[in-house]
Image (cartoon, rainbow, N blue to C red; front, side):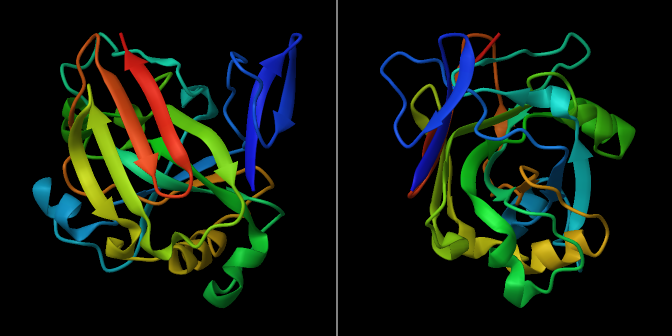
Length: 227
């Protein structure tokens, strides 16, 4: 089942199908966004790194969340802003120290995300916080799909209709259950929280006027514009 959040009569509503022309909202309201770095081997290598021996996690601020069809704003501090299409996990109930074989018991569903990154600032800082944290740097949506096996889904990112990323979630270094166990051994996840599971190879820059789309099999397409 798909869960959409949308604005109608000035109020946020949810349904399995949004009314025509109703503005879509981010499909969840998390207390935190936990992202995973270098979780596809070829992406790690394209940035000059080897795949990690354990998950690399970092946080993105809630102020980075952007609705479907919203506008990604390139900050003045950066000369290169990259797209990173990702599968996102949405949490259903409080999760702490969850073993990998029980992770689905704590999951509401899955959605598309774009871990937008100021690549030049990430390289300059040698850590992820500033380059990943600007306002509008976490588009998410268009919906939550609650009935999905995430182990081998097609993930495609397009810029102005041209395919830039084309991979499958089966190429993750650490699958969803392993990520879930690792993250919940560090922090408690609350209902609505989001895990970004990493991006495949093919990341690249976004320019003013671009339209970027992240499409994941069984979920749909997250579309955003760039200014």
